[in-house]
Length: 271
Length: 61
Image (cartoon, rainbow over all chains, first blue to last red; front, side, top):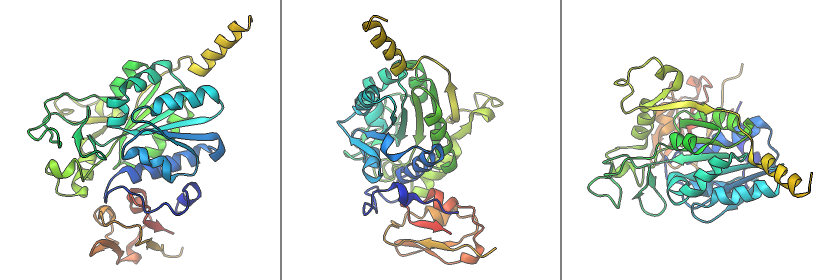
């Protein structure tokens, strides 16, 4: 049975602006299926984004949406959650937006363990602004600002999130379409900061500079590099060379920030 | 069971060819810059085309 995406889309907004073959559309569909699975109400859900290709996503969906300053999505989302703790808050953003320009906001949202779901679409590059390298651009890959190859090591987003204190961390790819909604749904159900990294393809800014002949080549690469965490447990370090782990990478229980803050209010009131 | 109906909304299709390449039964074919349904009878309703179409252009009923 075909899923009815129209019920969650703003009418007249399609076709979207993303390039042919850009995986952001696949992730948006997964996000909508996850929201449907969890039964989130439109009026009680806020989807927040910063700036970038991925951050255009909230413009297409019919929820309370906020398109904010570059990298500041997590900060705005924290504000919404603090003001209205009963709301379901999601953040959508790219790698440049989330862990470069917004790196500080990202790590502190993780540290506070505030109850939100951060979907980070990692396409390895700043797509919208002209293909500059981001902290997720693989070492020696080419970008418009690294024509001889990028010498920097990358941020491993799940490790960064776990290190900063996020209590639910998962990763999948745009190729693994059914896993996207399962992981986002698990993140939505989790009480606390949930970070879901979705490895994505950017055929326009990344693919054509890095010898990918087509979108299909990029999709096949995502399929090849992904290794489920359970399968990885039986693999040697040599076999895992160049692979990325997918699935739920980390989950723990820790006090949630809004609830902690209620205690501050109670103390201030002399309870 | 009636045979599945595979539909492509041409206004939305950007011709990325993901559906053509990943359909296990070769239901689709590129014609110019858009994908066309050429073998609807071969569809097994695995829904991979609809799941992976980034442009909301493929619908399987």
